Image 1 (cartoon, rainbow, N blue to C red):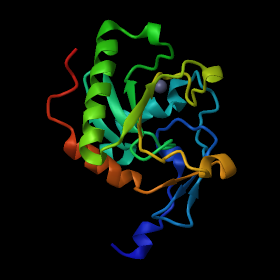
Image 2 (cartoon, protein in one colour; image 1 turned 135 degrees about the vertical axis):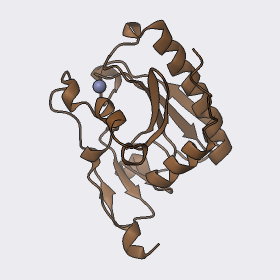
Image 3 (tube, rainbow, N blue to C red; image 1 turned 180 degrees about the vertical axis):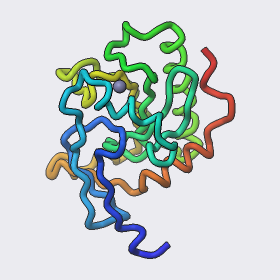
Image 4 (spheres, helix red, strand yellow; image 1 turned 30 degrees about the horizontal axis):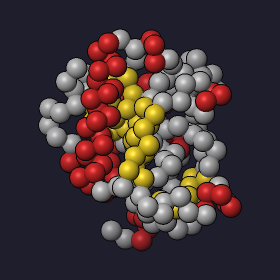
Length: 192
Ligand SMILES: [Zn+2]
């Protein structure tokens, strides 16, 4: 792969993610910053929802790691850390209480499998799991529920986010998606 292939900047609006206003420094790109933009103007409009749009695209384009029956697993375009995954129901619902029993079970099962896959691929020391419910609670895309699966390593909370609101991310998203998709066990995670 030539140097030019590594320095291509892509429009964040083309991907699904949960923006948090933090800028990312993609170390393989060195000079390329991707801003936390791409939030829909009207959060209630499913047409503008990146989590509704993602499943219609290819796994590679949308950074989807796995597609279940009622929910799917996607890389967060605005990761807190390398390998930050989101587990989303296909349905455009905001609140955890609105999920069907099947969706609750599958989001839980996919979360568990996501942890196993991330452990296999990148051996984190721990995880943060959770759902932000509503703008006030920190949800970037509050209208479409998503469960965060954030791998943690010793020393990953370094000084960069504090002084510069910038995090260094050592692996490109496309590479991470390939590794996770390849490690995802066939038939796993959809039990509900
Ligand atoms: Zn949606």
